Image (cartoon, rainbow, N blue to C red):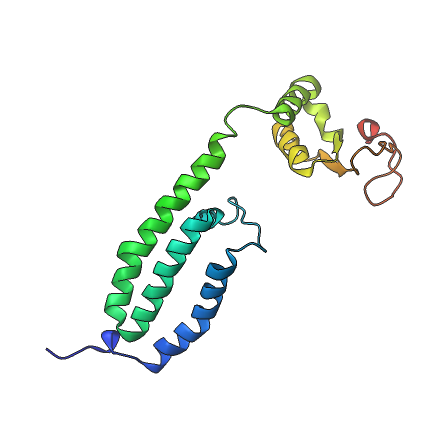
Length: 178
């Protein structure tokens, strides 16, 4: 049986793609992505990178699949689709769920935002949520559920300057803005 172009051994374009994709993949495996903060919101399919051992194992499998693809596209694609991709998705789903399970119970920021929404109602459009923990501020703002409400980050233990916004502009007390 004659070989098709798709399974052609060692085509130039396949080796070029391998030379382009291989080094960054190898770099990610060797460094363990220590210089990067993976965000499950932006890229949940890379959640397996949050565990160094999983990143190492899946990185090696992915790199092997890439090299095999350069030699024989049919076998490389099969290894990628039947081994690497399912393992990557399963492990990513596991790590994303592990993180999300910690968020089931409302924390202090969630409760503050929920209280504020119930207490202020429509007046929340003039609200400015202020504090030093940006992640928590946005959690509270999410619970307030008003697109007109804002966030003001201030340094930890710094006094709240009611007459200035985060850019130093005069705004007056946040709740009284109109």
